[in-house]
Image (tube, rainbow, N blue to C red; front, top):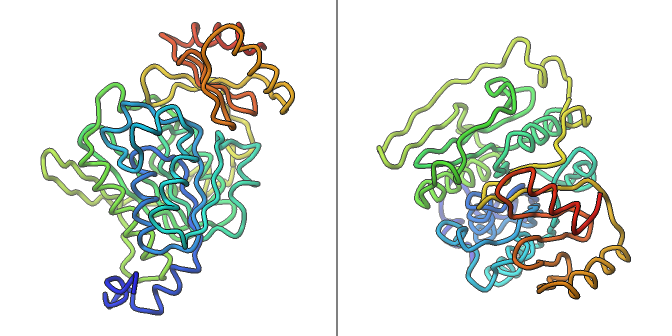
Length: 327
């Protein structure tokens, strides 16, 4: 009876619901788009969700990331999301990765058992990495983005549609929620459309949206834009997977947050992580989340050596990492 309202919708039905219950979706990025999409999919009865996010919950997230609450502040988003989703629908199997998706781990995290990927990330480097992976492995994915009052959704079906790099050539600096803000209404609209398209794709429906959808909730505008395959697309035509092959990678990334930088210049093992934890306890206040520790509300260190650092600029972030974690 749980999914009866979906089952009586003729486009889904009981057979469609059964298929959704056997499907696996990976969600990369658990900000406003990813966390909202994860909640909708869990409520819709998707069989398994694979959650990937490198960030922690911040106070400023709560304006639009409705899956989280004040008790989650400082906690890894992937862990917090799993905990809340388990309470929403305990029948959904959930795997989670508190990690930065990159060319070194993507093949392990996004294995062949995944039916569909939702791109809910906040930077083009990771988007292009996902695009490379999906084109190479013929994995379907749904691209989404939202900033200010505007948002985009685009279905990418390898060999059938254009890919992301057909219309986004390079990883240039774009507007972010930090620079121009973001309305919670646009993130809800975009995640709803993304999930709707995901369900269509999983059920092999003929009315999957073929255009790039653009929404502006402030102006109440909806635009559909046709995107053609690029004749010389470096990814889907030339099959040069430069992000997947590690040709293009960043060791320091500015996240969509309050002057937060992600840095990883070294790998650490469990013993080294525990040693750093002991060191931090002696010189400041820490909060231990098992998978990571928060130090003086300034540095969040993960158990693989990756750190999120609040700093005024990249130079200060590097300095703090070197000072407290080492090179």
